[in-house]
Length: 334
Ligand SMILES: [Zn+2]
Image (cartoon, rainbow, N blue to C red; front, side):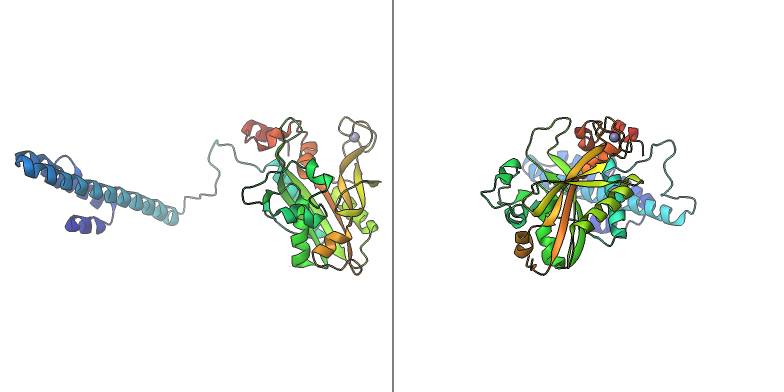
């Protein structure tokens, strides 16, 4: 057995491997012949010897196939390395090329614009603590806002992030008290799906904290970001709105980029599109992250990345985005 294994180990190429196979494992190979020779043994010895010989043959076969795979991989790699005519980066002939998902396209655009304004881009966890998702953004356990978010609770007590705001606490603690950050991410809500609801969706949130940060800064950042996304001048208007983690809080609208404010089906003929919530970060949120609200202020804003992508690419059913449907992805006009 050891001798046969050693012989197999010394095999260097596929030709030598074929010889090994012929010598031991083929119909006329030594191992096969030994098994055939068992019939001449007396019955008591035959069972035991047969068992041992079969095990031996099987073990050699396993090693043989492993060796074969390794030699083939080595041959392919050597060919790729040494043949100057093979370029593995050339797309396959007549095969459709892959493309970026609409969510990725929109995210990259936003990230580029925010980076140009000096924002950090932070990638957060999808599994977060109850504290990060709720308490740290001023949503204590008796707050009605908790009931509005149907949350996926995990057996270890953690939650699937229901909102990108769950990142605020960690970012403030890690980079504060002076920080500008944008944090796009996937969020989850335990709700039934239909054309406009999906249990997994993308949000994007941004915040800026420092000395003398004001609502004027917030409006400027929103205008710059949205004008960059749509490639044209966009106006932003704020309306009072309630979100537990900001005070004062606003809902904000963008002038409709599709009709220039004249009215169209996308903006429901109002000239404005409701995009999300924003405001000055609540003192409690800053304080919980160790930032002194009497010294530092900041704003936060959020919007639905999924919704933005749907508007941008005229997608009328949110479920298509997670479907992996190639026909849909190929139909996206970039
Ligand atoms: Zn419009």
